[in-house]
Structure formats: C-alpha cells, structure tokens
Image 1: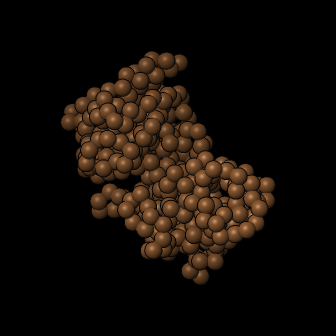
Image 2 (image 1 turned 45 degrees about the vertical axis):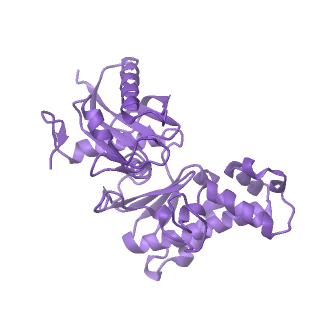
Image 3 (image 1 turned 135 degrees about the vertical axis):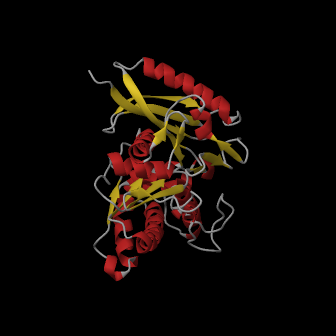
Length: 333
C-alpha cells in the first residue's frame, strides 16, 4: 500500500503557535498548540516545535510521509527565509527560521507572513480554487493581505509585497504601530473599529450601550453585538470601516484586477454588517470598467484552523512548483 503524504503547517503568533498535519486535499489530520514564549530565542521555539511535531505524528492513526513544512510568521520574508524585526517576538533584527528547520528536517521548508499564507490557503483549499487572480484580506488586531496574480502569490522584489494594511487613508490620521499615520489598518481592523467607536461616542449624543463600557474593556465583539441590536453608534462605526475598506480595495482592484476578494479574520465574522456596506462602497469607488466584475466574499477556510491550513498550503505549493535537492537540503531554481 502506498504511504499517504502530508505537510506540516505552522502558524507562529506572539502568544501561541499552532501546528498541524494537512493532506493534499486540505484536510487537517491533527493539530496542537504551544506557548510561543516570545522572550526566548527562536531556536528554543523551533526545538519545542520539533518535539511537538514528533509527538503529534506518533499519535496519527496511520503512517504518513512528510512532504514539506510551511510556516506563517510575522514579518516573514519568503525570499530570504527570515523573520525580520518582529514586533511581538524578541528575536532581534533577523533570524533565519527556514535554516533552523532545515537543520532538523531533510524537507522543503518555506515561510511567509500570515496573510500571504492565508492567500495560498484560499487558493489551494478555499474559495479561490480555480482562480488565477484574487486578493485575501485578514482582519484581526491589524489588517494583512495576500495578492494572487497569475496563480502565484505576489512577493515583489524584497519579499514584502501586498501590505494593503499600510497604505494611507489619511496622512494626518491615526498613529499606526508601524510608525506611519493614517494606515488602513488603524481604521479597518478589530482595534480600528474600537478606535472609531471611541471617536463617535465623543462626537455624537445618541444613547448607546457602549457608553457604559470602560474604554479599556471595549472589544470588537461588543461593538458587533451592539450593532446587531441596532445601536446607531456601532452601526456608524461599521459603516466607516466599510467605506474605507471599499475605497482601498477599489484601489487594489485597479492594480491587479482580481476575480474576487476574500475577507477573513475576526472582523470578517461580522458578516453582512461589514460585507453589505463594503460591497456597496467598493462598487462606488471602482473605476467604471471594473464595476460589477469583482466579487467580495468571506473566506471559505474554517476560522479555527485557517492559519495552519494556510501554512500547510504554502508547503504543498512549494513541493508542487519548486524542485528540491534533498542532498543539499535547499530549494533549487
């Protein structure tokens, strides 16, 4: 009997790191989570991950051959295999995670940021299957994006292409953690939505249940619940986010002309509260030739395992498109 194959998907976050085994059809065979311990060096995390991967593999109900490893991580550079100046990880200016894994596994290894991994996951296992041109937007604490052009993820010359979250909405606008002002993610993200609520509560006089919430306790979930209940302040905040999102997505369409744009992450879970006005504003801001031609959809990857599936999809994509010299333990070409 032929041994089945699977890839390892790893999603590294500032607090926790998830990893799992995923087959070629996008089925998550099993997964686990460990604390990232961000103050420890990267090599310590890799060692603990390897231990966890070994234990998880031993618990599988059948034998699988490992085909590759895909990693989603903050500030990851696909071209260099590095994580560079990560905000929430005390790893220094640059650490080559790909090399650390290749020292332990004779397998193809690839790394990219979490939004790019989500885009590859959507392309291989989600709603973008069969598409050649698509954009995936991840909306959580910040806003990330991955751009698919001609069936391939767009990395650009330095490996950091596709940062729509750091395109400018207002040059005199809100301060962003990146050091700029007025970035899209300061308005369209879970934290951006809460910042809009704080501003609107000070500008408007309508009663709102959110006036009773301590600002430090305000969450996007509370805003969502208030909006579902018809609260005008919460609905205005969603409309503001939707308008800015639609405007900047219209700009992105002008650059790449995608077949569809997929929204994922916590803020996308608001569903029609965000999607319906965002679709309307997208059409309003689109250059005329694009109107009625670009679909705005929710991601088809499951929210709970989408990050691991995306990272594993990166590994499968790498195996299918890039030759691997196992003697050297490096990609060739």
